[in-house]
Structures are given as C-alpha cells and as structure tokens.
Length: 398
Image (cartoon, rainbow, N blue to C red; front, top):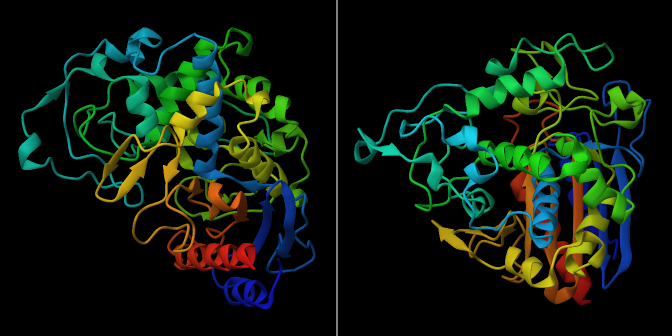
C-alpha cells in the first residue's frame, strides 16, 4: 500500500507543517503501513522518529475517556440519559447559571453575549451524559481553567509543587461555576469542558480508580487491549524524553518547549491528567484501539449495540455530525477526505493527531504528528489529512 503518492505527500509536508510523523494503516485486520518519518529534534537531527515514539494525542484522548465511560454504562452504572448531577451533584449547586458568549481559546478574549441569549439562564441539572457525549451540553467550548487550577506547573523532570489532586479540585470548583453559552440539547458546540466533567464522572463511577481517570482508562481500556504505550505524563512516569515527540514552545504561560508534558494548557494545568486531553501513545497502539472499535472487540466490555449507537449519528449541526464521543464524517469538506464512506468515524487532535475508521473498506488509519512544534498558527494539517486519506482509500481499492 506504500506508494509514490504517499511518499511525495509526506515529503511535501515534513518540516513545513510538522517535523515528525508516524502512520499505521490496518485493512481487514492486516497491517498495511507502519512507518515513521522525521526527527524528534528537528534542529539538531540527532534523534530519528521511530515506530515507538510517543506523540501527544491531544483530543484523541477523548476517545479513551468515552470508551471507559461506555464500558461503565454497559455495566449498568449510569445510563446515557441520566443527568450529570446524579454522579456529580456539585455541578448543580449554582442554579440557575447565566449565559455568556464564551472565551476564545487562542486569544483568551471573551466573546459578547449573543442578542438572543441576553438575560437567559440555564438549569445545570438538565445536562445529561448524552449531552456531554454529543457536545450538546450548552457548556462553553473552552475556558481558561488552568488559571483557576494553580500557578504554572514545574517542568516535567521536576517534582510537582502543587499536587495534581489540589489542581484538579481547584479546576472543578471553576467548572461548577462557569456560565453556559447555550441550552442543553440546542446544538453541537464542541466542548473540552464537557469531557473534563465526563472524566470526573468516570473516576467517581469506577470504584477501583480511587478517583483517578487515568486508572480507570488503564483498567477498562488500555490493559484489556494490551496498549502498553498509552500513558499520561510520560516523563514523570519514566519514559525517556528522547522517546517523546515535542510540541510547541509555550511563550506565554510555561515559558518552555512542551517536551514530555501535554501541550494543552488546561490538561497541563490540572496535573497532566484529564478526560479531554493528556494521553501520549505510539501509533501502533492508537491504531489497535481503532481496530478494537471496528471489530466491536469484546475486550472493551461495551455492549455491541451501544458501540453501534456510538458510531451512529445522534445530531447534526451546520454539517457537523456527532455520534457518542465520535466525530462522524461530514458530508462536505471532511478531514477524512472525499473518498472515505459517509459511515466513517474518528477524531482529530489539535497537536496534529488523528484516528479515522472506514467500515466499508475495513480501514483503520492512525496518524500522529506534532504539527504545533513550529507554533499553533501553522496551517496545512487539514489539507494533509484530506489528501492522505484519499491516497489510502485509493490504495485500498487497488
């Protein structure tokens, strides 16, 4: 399946859009591509990327949180339409909550309140788990939670001055008080806050996790599937820095390059472990996770009917189609390209990662890059993803 088109595409984007990349393609259960390109240290070029290099998954982390939650649903602990307050009652203490315009994740500027929302309020007890999974909770897409969590953390090769538990408690205090930006069930508004709260629900529901989302994910997803590389806080857990692809130089908050610590400020601010971001992994383990979903793998302990529901359209807003935690292929201008079937599903990560599954061709495509290395404003990752998946679909048909 490796062909000249693929090599030319990667060569055109390597060092321009991202300095490091790994790719794994599985078709019908057989590995067709397993490749690595670039350097962990693009300036000195002494550390080549390998198949074992760990990448910051960013929002692909959400899929692991969702899978953990759905396994708990299958075990009968919560139901999809249960209110969030049935597990996290603190979320409903301030009731009603006002509506504001939200906050830009890049400039941190607060948006004005839309005219049709001025003076309106939301009852937080109406937010259900289904709302969180479909990004229809009415919660803001983003807030600067990290500023509420505590001072900028120490570099990952030093001891934490503020324990993760303290940072997370501070973050939750803020999450329970933020205004909404819309009404539950109204429309899709992709929200990191919703998955942070889902992670907290998972940690409370999974009695063996001692209140830790990382332990719940490990026990219910990564260990059963044998995904040994999937980890939060790799440097703090003994992974050599040279085995981790670095991301952006944070000029404003941490004032250092993110290398061995999560790029996402909110995940980093709460101690590197959250439901929306924070996981690192090798490309093989991301692909094998996707294969487990494609094959409805019983090791996930999610009822097959619930797995099917998760990858079935629950809502569409302005062309954005959502399952339960999964992004479904858009009808137009999809990151999955133009040749993947409409039944395809997956997720992207802000750092340049993605996992896409195309059931009709039995394809699983895991692509890990660190496209934020030169700065988060660098463009080209969407075009790269589209061309990559079109090439892979063509090769699968040949």
